[in-house]
Length: 171
Image (tube, helix red, strand yellow):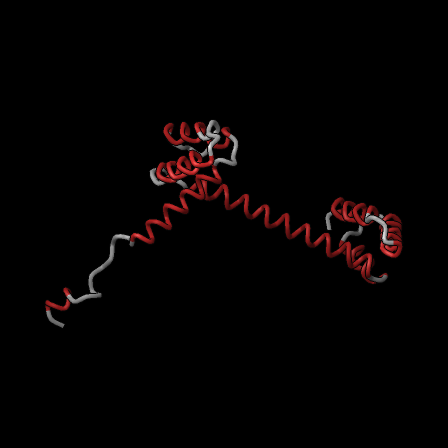
């Protein structure tokens, strides 16, 4: 290697992000600004924003025009670039995780309900092993009524009751 190798193409270090990367970052900040608009004003104040940022967020409540709101969201993105957004990202990360966990729990309850209605005594036994404090008689009655509703093609009122009870016992 000689001294001139440092000047060959591809050897220089790119310290500045590309224009595309800058645009992606700004769009991410604008998305974050848009999500901030869904929060309450009291939540904005807990995030430690500057007064300029808080004023811009408050101002967004008055904007009615869609085009004006689009411009305002761009402004929020620009202001967010000057803020410490770590707390904001953590807040939305926690909210997203809670929503995901709640969806998973909901699907798990639906699966238990469907297995109980379609299943046999073994499924009920498995449920009672998991939740020993559950009322066996009430569960059997709800399952029996749900099966009847399916056979008679009636609205699923008992299935809803079974779902609610499964949620109560903490499946």
